[in-house]
Image (tube, rainbow, N blue to C red; front, side, top):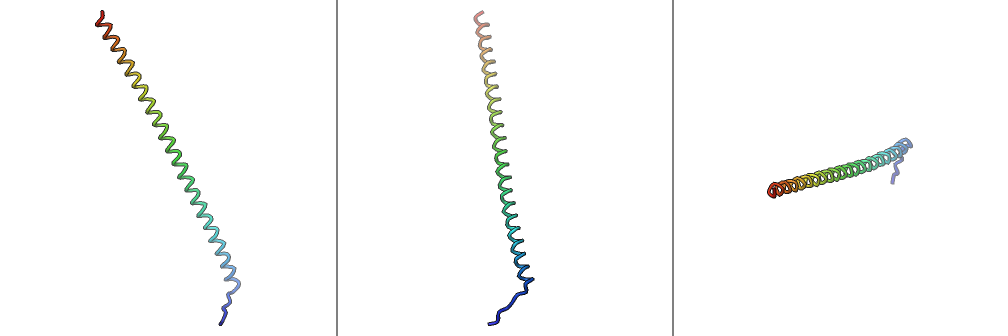
Length: 85
C-alpha cells in the first residue's frame, strides 16, 4: 500500500479552513441568536402596545357609558320635574 503524503502547506491550509469554518459557524449562531432576540423584543413591544390600546379603549367606553347614563338620568329627572309641575 502506497501512503500519499500531503505537503505541509495543504495541511496548514486545511487547518486554517477549519478555523474559518468554525468562525463562520459561530457568526451564524450569533446571528441566529440576535434574530431570536429581535423577534422576542418585537413580540413584547406589540403585546404591550395592544394591551395599552385595549386599556385606553375600555376606559373611553366606560367614560362614554357613564356620561350617557348621567345624561339619561338628567333627562329622566327633567321629565319628572316637568310632569310634576
